[in-house]
Length: 589
Image (tube, rainbow, N blue to C red):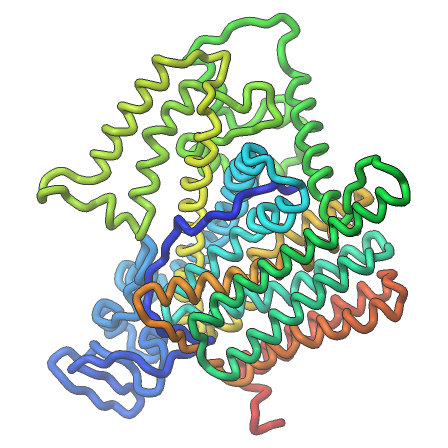
């Protein structure tokens, strides 16, 4: 169902301060003009410049001000000016909307957040993953290697990019660990429980125990670092190293498994079920979709003009398919259609399963112009693309000219019918462009959630473990339930544990490493009170319970155990929300 993909996505280098928190920062630079609200202590000539005493995020104090002061406050407060992203959400809400229209602004932000989650899923599933599948095929990687590297990266791209975007700013770093831990609890309880409810089955014991041991080790390591309050360079590299050990363990166990099978059954090739089933299912699904598309191809071959090929490639849905679908699908398709057309115009997709590898001469030539243009206009919020060479000529215009030159060469040296030998290079371009689109959407998601936290006085931790975790995990819930209903529950449960391990190790590891690129080799992580410990403790407890109870059931997942996992999640969510709103606190324990 999900494609195999490639490992290098460090093209998205996020910048930010070296001091990040889980989820409050205690050391913030102060200016000569400071504000201590509540104690009403102002210094300097600008009354709204500086930080709140004892608060990590200056911008969170804006709701304590009168409506007439809020606009001036967000204009002069550094934390209200996003370090990345294209939209300044606090300034837009408090300066462009009247105070009476603030509820309308928040409603629009919520709708925009849903659209951004759609953009993340669409860019990852239809553009990012297929291109990395093509790269994997070009490199000739085995199914086992691709399954634990490229498949994991493709499935976890929204989570990892969201974590790196959150780590890029000190006042939103709480979203990162909150989302990674929250998604871990959601996937291992709600998603795994739903799979057990749909299709009770018996787990493959050794792969399950292997994944659980590595995931518990990652959670315990993160818990230790949060307890210490900081992470060093060696520890950040250790996150990446732990996943490399996991990959090596998978490959060695797969080799031993195949060797033993060959010794028993002869030289017939045998595939490991826990990793290869996902790939086999993906290939069969792609072939069925391709067969369905070929159903409407004309019986007699005919040659289309270049204009017809170009216009046909931009058609987001077939009219016959549109008529068969329910109205809910049509509404969602209409919402996604502008985004799909935009991505089709900017991101090339190479499909090795098709005879022509998805070659489209006019559209691919256009990609040579629009793809690099998107890169320079989205990387680091477009700062490099808008830079003027010698103060006169913009970089984006130079990129357009260079892309037009390459497009002209490719157009004149190729035909519509046959892809060129270098067509696989378009998968590299598509990978980079789609990665930057995903990073842009993830940065905006983090900014919107930060704004919602300011307005509703919610911590980054609770926003991460709820909205961000749900937004990034709802696709896993739907896809894994669908796979289980089709008779592949083992593959669905394997995706539950393998994917979140990759997300946690790479999300935290790369997020912290990006903060260290500025020469600061220590990143401070300060838990935001009791809620952070409840979050990490609940995740650890859910894993320990599964690690103990599932073997006691002879690795058979029943509907009763599925209900238990779902109930566990809702109890955790209730405790977390009660803690967030002050009903549960250390003094009451």
